[in-house]
Image (tube, rainbow, N blue to C red; front, side, top):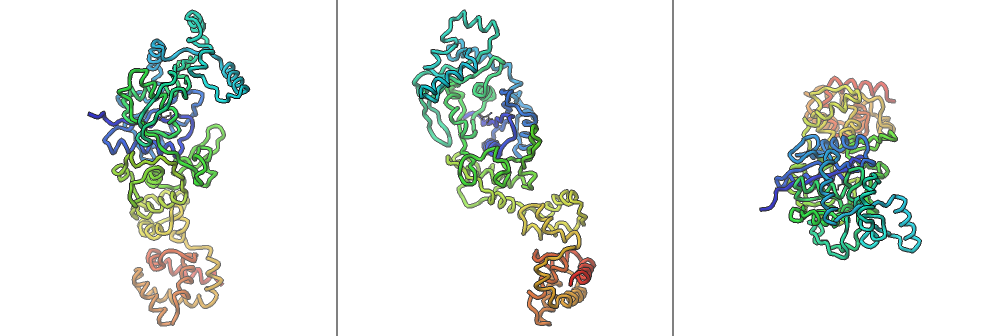
Length: 507
Ligand code: GLU
């Protein structure tokens, strides 16, 4: 019987989550939900020197906004907790001790200065990539070269140390990656990584493997940058006697800059003209804010839809996949190996599609806080129809408001081009006539249209002569949605007062 699907997203709280991190969380989540499994959030905070205040809260909030809700995690709890590695500190030491006792790891007492010195010397000798490994360890200060008593004396004197994994020489490590197939690495290419430090904390590699084992993780789905660490993790499983319980690996492709030139990074901030963070991030040190998709007005589902397509495709032409549809369609087999270029235009396009597909009533609800924030007065009953008209020509809610201010207040400025080209001819006369013609209707869009067309026919006027001037008088703008719809929403009293105002203010 195959084991239950349990996957984890394991970010380190060393700063804000970048959209690549959110995509990793998303793929884990989609995979878990599709398989009826469990999605776990684990905070990997063993490296206290890189800890950034507020980062964990940021991660939780960003996931919540994106709709990627963990089944187990620091907030939710669960049977395999605690879900923050610093809270699991006491549980790691015995495994480290086991590796030392079985000669699979060793104490190293070399200071940072001594290690730098070694690297410098190697560089001078034209061997730039010095590593602490199966060869060099024999000439370093560690429990393999020092006597038992010397080692004990150092430990008793509380000398700082690191525990390093003892990588075997010239052995093959083989493992399967769902996305990349079989991977074979020779251990001669691996170094003796530090797995534990004398501050009592394991390093990422050790804590990660122990926790994946203890939390019964079935699949490790993470970014490609962790692929070089995977052979070490496989060895740790082997050394700890857990090979049978080893999870399946899947290393996701990189998200690239729009020009394909390198990885899209946190440092790209707003530099490329689009956010790289899910929600605003205020740097606690500099106070600077980098923008996020939430604050830019994206729908969470447009955001996750866009992210899902950076590396995965459903194998059809369909592109609109709200979260539940993504769950139904997702499989790791359809995740590619090649880096996925970020496409800013396409990202806006996704939001546009969600805007158009959202019901007018729902949009009206979402618009209320935007209008309130901008201190714009509105009539709640009119909002759904206004949204219906404005959503066809906008990508964001805020853009709808910008484009449709005339629904909420009479214009004070009028589109100059229309005024200069059209109004000055005989517009005042035309809008007067139309005001009168409209007043004889019931002011529904249909009857306004008929009255308008009848007027054109009777006076042998083209639409171009009358339409734009009436529009500019009522909305101030040279273009927009159907004028009959606009007039029907505004109502007779407002339309007439606007025409009167324009007649007074315009030349
Ligand atoms: N803590 C690692 C990170 O920050 C987790 C990598 C993994 O998923 O194994 O990305």
